Length: 348
Image (cartoon, rainbow, N blue to C red; front, side, top):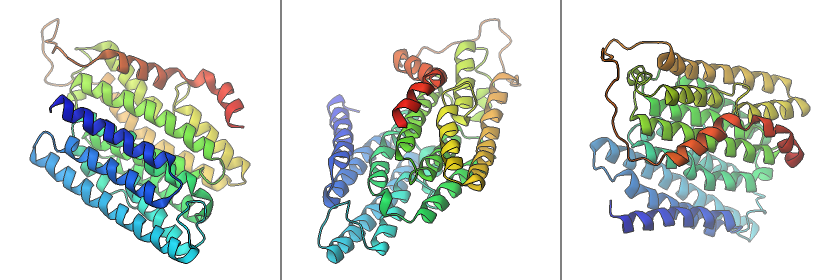
């Protein structure tokens, strides 16, 4: 892709998200979301592969549907209340419609069906943008209007997402689909605690972005998109294989890795709010997710593929990828648990 075109598209992505961040008016927020969608569509379709075009079409249709529902619901709310402000969401029908549309935008269950299919059709870097940057604007809108939503509806969405994100990833052999289900499960963790402690949602989002970025960049460096090719990488780059396994365990939320911190805080908050049953279901759903991360780690570190080379030093491909972002994200995805006391001070 032409570097000028790429720069324009990436700056439009940034502009759309920033516009949504800064807005307290529904029309401005909707414009930000639309700019965001239109900027990523050419990035998704840039390889002209039939699967990429199919993924782009699916993504465009779901995002356009969600944007239309947001526009309709905010217009309904403005018609009833007389203002476009986000803080004044008094009509329950409009509020529920907006939550459904924003859930469709970020891929919360049961509006998650597009997410694995779309991610499967993209290359790893565009998939990284879709899994991290594209979640920021809709999630900001959900956080801003959280007090207007029905608490039971938020809890249901959160529980369904963590359970479906765990179940869906169990039988996948495509790594991008595994990461898509991982994304759905993490979004569930963020939504479940939103009504009690929005700062924990932001903390979980930050940690999710760090861990997912590290996972995607590692797979990009290894040029791996399928489970069976994971079994051959240990002989090519053993250190990278080790860090990749640890990143996956961090995504699963195992201590002493970074991913344990948000899960720990969220379960603690749920218990504090007098919801032991919800906390128990969330912890069990995290175990289901952990199973498929362990499956990937097992394939990567404990199995020898039948088609490994017999030579002492296997052939290594040269990469043009910058290693500094990967190194930074990996360190943060693995080693931020010791800053937990500082996080307690910040969020309490």
